[in-house]
Image (cartoon, rainbow, N blue to C red; front, side, top):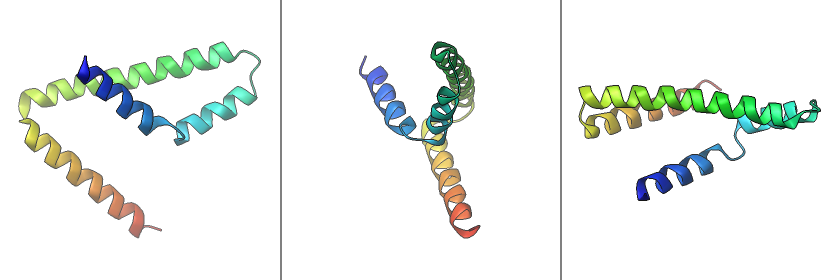
Length: 87
């Protein structure tokens, strides 16, 4: 149960006020059916998360967790440096 709460809190905090949420706000201002906007966004989020979990499960079979953490961190840093330098 603890693992579930850690994932929930991490995802909740990382998704608050991101570009996707601003896009949804924009869609909601133009729609008369907010349920359809919510449903479409929820389904899209579920599908992308399903892909991530399945991919993560497959990667876990090929690499130990410490290698995955190192590669993920390295890729994240490289993208950050590239973003800073490309401006």
